[in-house]
Length: 302
Length: 277
Image 1 (tube, rainbow over the protein chains, first blue to last red):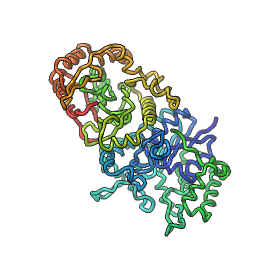
Image 2: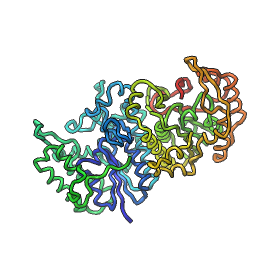
Image 3: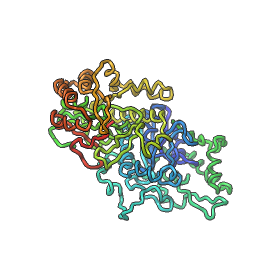
């Protein structure tokens, strides 16, 4: 029987370089990466439902879900308005510089409420857990930071915009969500169980030396790319995810992907991240760049 | 919300104005036949809100085999916004035809009908799978025929099995359209009048009697439905007065627990309802 892997998430799952999902895929016969850069948790939940309508996930399949943050406004348009691509349009959290034109104060006044948005995230996780339980597949869940920390556990060096800046200057506690929104704590026991794995960004922050740095000709100084590097993805995969999936010894193919990535990154021209992205995401890239991984992965779904 | 250890059979209903309205709906008629009844329906909401309210309800109640959950899906053209400062939690002006402010601008520029069809199909899918993991009885239905409107669009052909699930009942309007129930004209707050398009109490009674009672093994009180209907046609002339008229003339409120959600303050009456669609 063929083994199938389905992965879901945001740019921590699908990115310009191989992530934990791609590294893990070499151990499965079939692989679909439903991650998409910028997605929020509603989109992730909907895409899991959509994936099942297309693939009929069974108890023989493995599903890994990486939740993003509660500050993303997921919207979908099949036509791609205003020069955008078609499909999910999320593009990260609403406070991100790229989104400031779209989500100005009048919009935020009407539509944004952190408590509601955190509740939406919790609801989408509950719905997804029941959904996956009903399918009988093997599944695990993770996130970027611990969702209960509302983005306050992201290292300042890597991210400083995946959280709400509170005006009350209150001391931020561990699991700040339950401090701010105690009525939502009722969700905790039904969400965080044995299927959860250490958040990706927390693992990456423990291996700070392995982040990738870039410096294009126009950059005055080198700057650190905040997404986990392939090596950081590999560390998380091998120390957190693979042990709970009861997989055999680490395959050679996994290391060869890391080696190719490292070799490419060392090329001088790829100090410019845009050039690196253009090379890596070019659909006409030499398919043999990774001899055991179809690259770049095709974006799935509507 | 779970306040009585002796409760045996509980009913939880979800939907829009076809489930929660100025006058009793199918939900309240069948709800009277249960030991405990929560109506999570809310006029004006769309399918995203219905799905999230279902999730909230599951989290907030230990659902058992003694329980029954019934969902009435709304139309696809609604834009749901959660507003915890409102007692009813979800904004009720969700229809995309509602005009004004950032909502209108957003919808004009970014709303897409096919995307909203996809969302509703995903919501139904998520709800069906969630309910299938619970020990309770459950049923769902829509107002109009989703299958005809949506899945016949080849893009969404993969979703067609959702509607052949045995727990997906025929759409309400398919039954209502067989009969010519009278309509009522009511005065709006601005003095204009509207022929209300919602089913009257006797229409709800007929629907629940023929479609829900047989599968639930229940009967509904015809005299109570007649009384609700008579009150509507004899006393009600303006929307803003309906709540008080029913409060005075029908033993309705005592048996229904209207539930907005987990966040915010609880409400014990229906005075929040001033903007139903």
